Image (cartoon, rainbow, N blue to C red; front, top):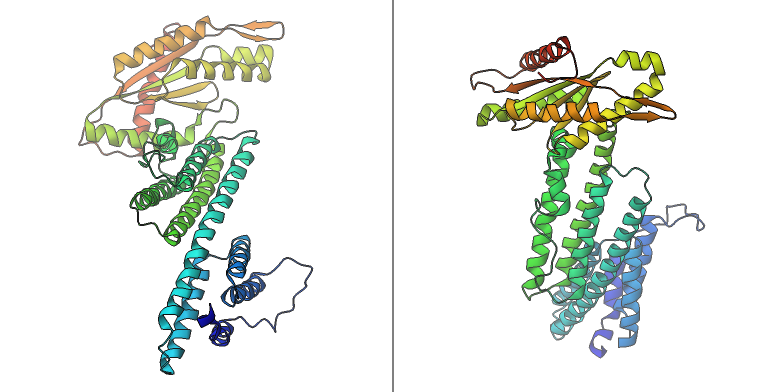
Length: 426
């Protein structure tokens, strides 16, 4: 410390050279602190640290600087680059003056400051990152309709587990899942239920962000286990992970909006406008693999009579009841669309005509056995179903006309079921 004191005035000059001139700014002290003013205060705290006269002052001023830096969202990179800039200017000045006597001592002085700052910054940063993510979880917990945010919850839990792994400082094999397809969030992204989102730009961005985040996490784990730990590197990696996590949250919010418009408001089934996108995707897969898939078209029997007798409000309850029959009877991999009015279309991936007929009969039987009770009214109803196996030749061009042809064919099967007496499958 004695050696460094003789260079305090030079250090002061070096720091002053990097200060921001704020004289031209009109600043109301009662308002929130502007970022440029935060930087100015940061410079003052930074200089206080470098001019500390004892180890007690060093510890106290390091805490003041690091806490202020994090509180005002000043990046560690800014703090580090400032430290490097000052030491380079100071050493350059000494070399010009042929003062080589204490260059090693000055280097050690700044390296010790860098290490103290990085260690404390990482500790505080990880604590704050934990609090921010717990706050995000609490915000999601009180949402009435979470939709896709329920999957973002699992992602935040994964982030918290990663932070806890770094903080416990043991670096064993108890780290969170690093494979982006095997974590809970990744499983959801690659499930059949998200297929209708695959063509959206937000889903593609989300997928890229998620892969990048896991790649960074793998680097964090490998780095922790390497035994050559530098807090500055972990700070950088965790800053990037937090950035990707926030971006994932933004994309999930956009997907929630898409989900809102993609679902029928009454039944919460997929809407007809999504059918073409999913159908195109399944036709491409069938053409490439030679695998058959099937369509089911359902129409409630004498539904107009229900509306005319009991009113549209009761008719809506019947539609919701049938939607629940479909969801309870069919598989999670099947796509259920409200096609319009009392018509429903179901796309059955990797399902041949025989299997489709069996599933359709289950739906038909479950519908006939069910009852809808509204106050003192009990309504029984039935459904007619047409089925179609789709096996596409590799030479066939896939376009809207192809899709319309299959819709017409399954509709004809449904019409035949109606003509044969209703409450049946064709």
